Amino acid sequence: MNPLFGHDGQRVLTLITGIGDLTAEEVDQVTDAWKQICPSDRAAAWAQLVRTTTEQERYQILAAASLARREALATAHRLRRVDWAFWAAVSDAAAAVAAGPRLGPLYNTLTAPLAAVMPLLAASTGSAHAGTAGLTGPDPRSPSILGESA
Image (cartoon, rainbow, N blue to C red; front, side, top):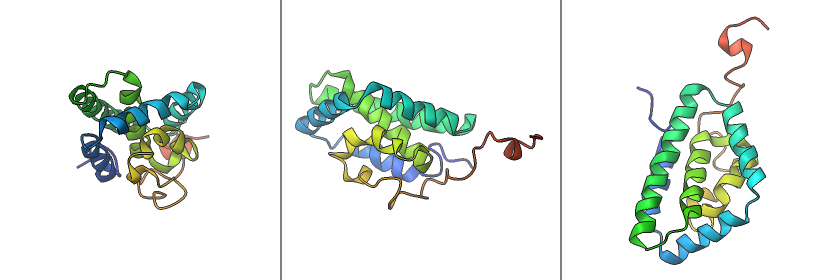
């Protein structure tokens, strides 16, 4: 059986289930922090994610991001917060957790806004998180992995 959110699915689920515990002030803090991240840095992180994952891994990553966004929408609605930057920050963070250490320093670009209120995310890819996602190794699209000649 292939886990829905990749090899680090438990960590993704922990993130998702923690979203509903956030306070209105924490939602505002995440929203403000997300707006401070340079859009081109976020784009670079997502581009790295696409370049270094297989189609199946991207499906798992996007499933994590989608479910996290839905939970963020429900939480924002309950707390009467309407700024879409909160939903985007949560979606970015879930995608980064699902993608794991292959993002390198860009992992923090996607997780930093939510990490301020969710200590689970504070571990960077170079510390306790490294190696936990099971997504390390050679580029899965490389010729040697695909069985093609170079």
